[in-house]
Length: 277
Image (tube, rainbow, N blue to C red; front, side):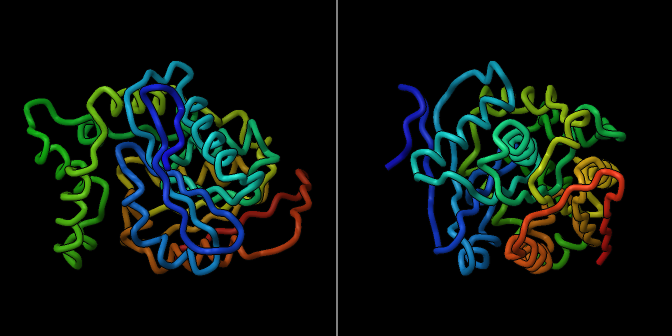
């Protein structure tokens, strides 16, 4: 059964596996189908929860409204505390949750995301048009252009059939234009850059070195701002690094989330970890 938010909106969700709960929050315009490379692997170790918000509404508060959806789902599933994984816009939501409700977040994984408006590098005009939708392009051509920008040339060359499947899935499960642009505006207003040092959850930041939507420098700045965050940069991958380099990403996530023990914060001796593979 879906979780009702209002008379017009609801959350559809899937729960797979057993173990510590892990909430996966997708990016702008991507449904829970986008975690097709994560759920089979991660559900061997964790109780994975993926979801979509259905219906039309206004995000008057922006990202905090999206964060409230996650909390409503956690309450519905009787999950007091969980690991939280967010990609792109979902990474904004994950950060907001860790900042405003730290008691609900165990460990934090941030993929292809940033601190928002306060990040050091802006998106290129070309990439912004690809994200927003080029004027005059029909739906399929706009989706294809956006996914080409979101992935590396090497991925598309190695996986042409899978790329075509991404196009079909994205076409079949796209939000309405109104919902899409409302989320786009919410993301454009988000800025955690001055609050990152308040995040207490242990954090892992994963970024593709060829990300054209969120430049890798922004992922590095995000990891630098969160106390003791781990940074993993993966070559031959763009914004959809969790699909393009899913094997490496899943290993990094599993290893990180299965670590035990509390982190001891010591601002005067922050430790940084950077790995390029």
